[in-house]
Length: 255
Ligand code: SF4
Image (cartoon, rainbow, N blue to C red; front, side, top):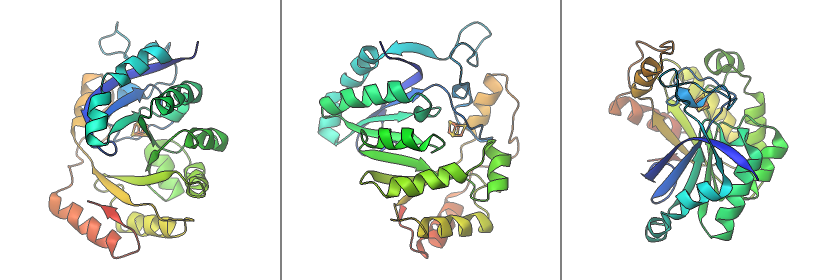
């Protein structure tokens, strides 16, 4: 039986794709972004998850049937709102067999499927999942490779190459950029983002995700090092300015 490791399920989500959605958070991520909202989701090994209180593990093993039962509970909301299920994390592509099995089940029940990914996965995995997905929410963070490695712990070359390959398929894509003041919102990073998107085989729309300091509260709660103690949340005015810069290029910024 195919099993996966979840660390959370959020109902009635309205920012993870169209309509009202159930967001299923899978445990494990190959990145370690310093602004991560879900640091407790990063541990890759189910046997060694970050623990909330020294005894209770965050992630839990589930079978496909169990997670489908959670997803199907909300079908009336999906039907009314044009919603569906979104797989997030962690990094959902880090559990490809489980993800593919659940996506196939959702497909058989005509449930809209979104996958929220950092794009750091083997190309074959990404394309196999793309065949089973209606919408990709694809994160772009820091474009310069050296700075990306510094802030997330990994090289971004495979992420950019995977995005270009995904753009060659028919799957719908929404790009997402976390706006982390002083890190992703610099003039240089915005310029490089525009250049990267303009060079893609097609230009998906892009949504800005403002950084929230709540992430740091979680680091504190889990007894983790506080990586960005002084980074503020971006103001509305600052977000408007970034939108203006990006829309003056060929990028469509989702409101
Ligand atoms: S890719 Fe997402 S889940 Fe993974 S470390 Fe970065 S912010 Fe956290």
